[in-house]
Image (cartoon, rainbow, N blue to C red; front, side, top):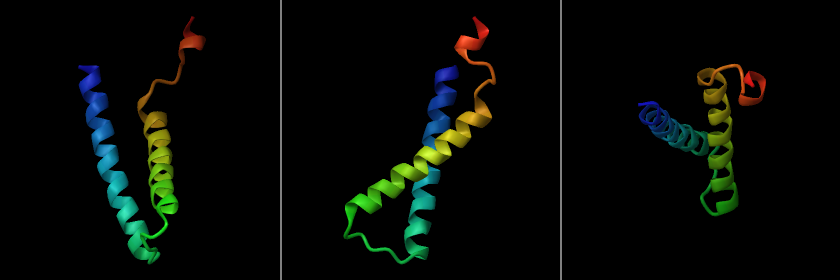
Length: 67
């Protein structure tokens, strides 16, 4: 059941990243000519949101601390 929850959170996170990325490009009036900036910003936004999500959802103690 845990794997379904993680998959659901990741799916929602990707949808949120698409929304934020689209707003980001529309507000800053950036073009789609440079694919490095386009996909680089997408990966950066996903990485930041994934870090925040993991900080919120994962337990505090890691594997090394518990052994």
